[in-house]
Image (cartoon, rainbow, N blue to C red; front, side, top):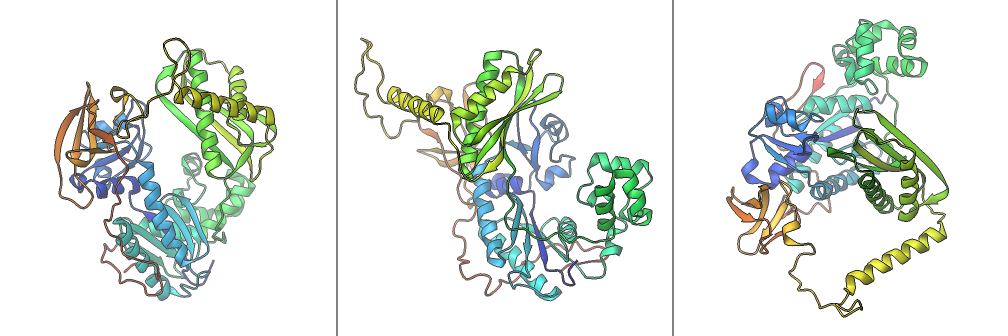
Length: 486
């Protein structure tokens, strides 16, 4: 524990949903749900308006629709979220060399390591300056917690939501934690929480009073020791700038169970290629290929194969995943498939034969795409495509709800919905008034997918920040008990 609250935890408020509301003026102040929209979709994020109706993350989308039938249901736009996240993380990096991202919208920062704070007053000023900078650059709000440990800083940011700052004064930690649920402590999930509840422990005070020996008896030596220390407010975990990934994986849940073995194999191969794309994007390779299969009865099977050396070759991973599939009984149907790579490394030890085969396959596909067959079975020169023509058949295009489009006559907009050969679009921009709604045929050549627009038209230049911290924006005061807020 530090004697000053110099560990900062930032958590963006309802990140995906807030970004969608900022991008779509017609949705501001309304219930917005972002997630999978199919029969088996789940909620990724709900706006605060939707949360007041009972919708929350990880809830089945079908249940959310029953609770909030009039909410806007949108498919995630990760390209936008990653862009905004990079802006936020860039601001955090100006505060300290020790920034520990936990996700796109959440991170710890060691303010002391960056020379930005050494007491409560300087920590508060830095936190308020950060909130103002984030709002100016992204148009979004983030909640900030400040404390002498990571655990307490995260608890403080939860207390600060939405759009606030809470600082836990040194010496008040035990009083603050005592009445809180055991679920606020790291590592206490639903199962452990229920186990402790059956033992009569529902608050952090109960854990502290039970003593270390009793907690060890209940949950084991390693977990019991750590749990008792956290109940006393003790947390010495440092902020770690580099969080090394242990695996890279992708998975898909299908709206309808897959029964066709050929289709299952094709999906596994497709996931293997996507997994390698992520692996290469991270400049990593891996030695162990893992296949995950969730069957019709919700039973989940995993199979793995360890290669001779690390690889990022798509053919090697695809073939390994295919071999693993052969050992899995998919009779009855498959509802989820996943492919992952573990045992990550910064170098590769390629299977040269597989690499050569993959190169030949890519070359063959490129030739076929470039030189279509003539009527006589030979090859002929392909005509130059028109620049404005889309790369896929117009009628085959998909229009996910919430995604960006551009119409040559009406400009930029977003998809409100599609079906029965029609797509409905609302034409508006982040900095415009709510726009009008028009409907088109799905194969209208004048309507094309588009990239997201920035949420702030002309963000201020923060190249010299935080040399002179901006003044704090006014925000709600979420203080309670031993918490200190603006």
